[in-house]
Image (cartoon, rainbow, N blue to C red; front, side, top):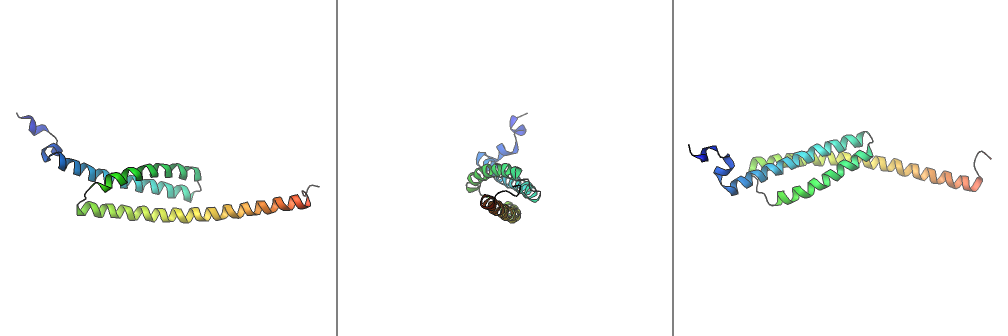
Length: 131
């Protein structure tokens, strides 16, 4: 029995076609992973888990860099391009929610810092209330 019958389909298609399919699959896999990470980031922001959000954001940064390289070199068929666009829309939607949540948190933090500064100035000017 010839060994060619046992070879994976990608080898039968030739190395260039196999690489294109692998690259397209990797592009989609990366966008799916980015989408999952942005969901985790959104959930962390919703629950005020800021350290977790930062940690996940670092993972996203690395994955975005890897995805840019693969994506720029990969041709996608129409169905795969539509799938990629749908994932990007989901990622952008989640990022918008994260941005709103972090903006609100930053405003609260800024108000708290301002309030603390005013309290410190009053204490410095008039002394502590325990005196």
